[in-house]
Image (cartoon, rainbow, N blue to C red; front, side, top):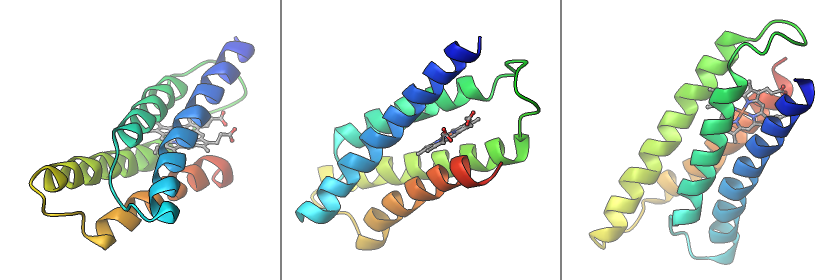
Length: 117
Ligand code: HEM
């Protein structure tokens, strides 16, 4: 069971890597666009995160306050991706604050996962 859970943690990390990597490529490659790969990363991290939030009956209690906060942050990132994508389609561009918030909030969720035990 623990091995299976660790595989789900790995998938969760792949989602983080895909989302943050796609964002970083845009942030530091100068594009500053929202891309489909970011949506996929969020989806992978979100699905694996929900699976991790299930009571696996191993290694102690789950921190449901932390999980709730992470879920809210995920929903906000999803809203930003959705609004930004819609604006891009209308050729309105993504406001810088919206673009940077996506990266910052992704890091916040990773930080919550690693630091809040
Ligand atoms: C953008 C979204 C997210 C990112 C980038 C993210 C990132 C991370 C990272 C980096 C870890 C650390 C893994 C480790 O310490 O080995 C983690 C752990 C965790 N995350 Fe997320 N996460 C996200 C969303 C979520 C959501 C939506 C949930 C639940 C609803 C969730 C639940 C968890 C749980 C339960 C852990 C602890 C796993 C463990 O160490 O056993 N995450 N997350």
